[in-house]
Image 1 (spheres, one colour):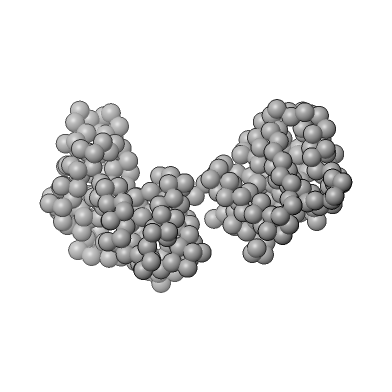
Image 2 (tube, rainbow, N blue to C red):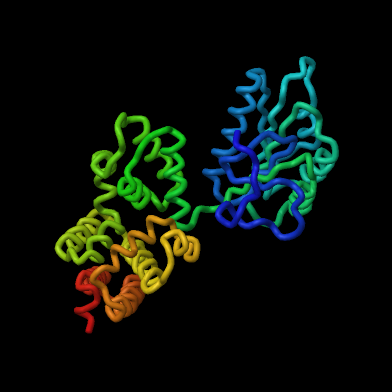
Length: 348
């Protein structure tokens, strides 16, 4: 397994107060007597816990795995499951719902932390909240005993892109940048779905994965994706954008996420517009992936500052219209596509 490293903002904010133990990202989990898996991102937490179980089982197939619910806990259960057996097999105890833990579990866990038995690994899954704070503080102060795995939500497009990229890299599978962007855009709302789509492509394709490959497997999802409509409109391809919009709406797409996709693209363009520096510098400054900076620079060709400013206002008006302030959301969307496809010139 990869060596531990301190988690930065991309992996999740550090908790307040002094932290004496290593904090690592979900894909760098490693054995420790006590492993705290914290944060709201359940899919990544499950991935991390599964990875640790597989690692321990590979080291010793005789691994004993037990599951405990902290909110329905029986006094003494933790010590009993973690204690050495007659034959001394390694033990893995997985504790769920620590954020809802009972007082009995809290008391037993604090006592356990003082002297964990040899050969046992206890994983504590805490999804967030203030319940169990005394235990969290004690774990984070237990230098040499505990490890924290931070599973924060992946909110930025750059984080989701890096996640998907890592899926293909780990499998040794080559995928073109445009194909990777397409698959991330199509499944950006659900990390589990994104991972599943990546694994499907990895399992079923022998050659380099291209945009055509993605379209073959997920054409309907990609074709009706709001980002595809936004890309066409921003590039000035009015007819293609309008057809894509109507296809998306006919497929049941909600107008609100469609506007959100346009807003995301336009905001990125506005950030990059007029900004000096290399692609890497701008990516770090604005919290973007390098490909997003390069894409925004390409998208800005043919645009003026005035046109971009008018478009920002148009997107804001459309957002308000589709959220109830307008009588016809479809008309508002079509007006937005028309204005953006003209690069703001029709809005004068």
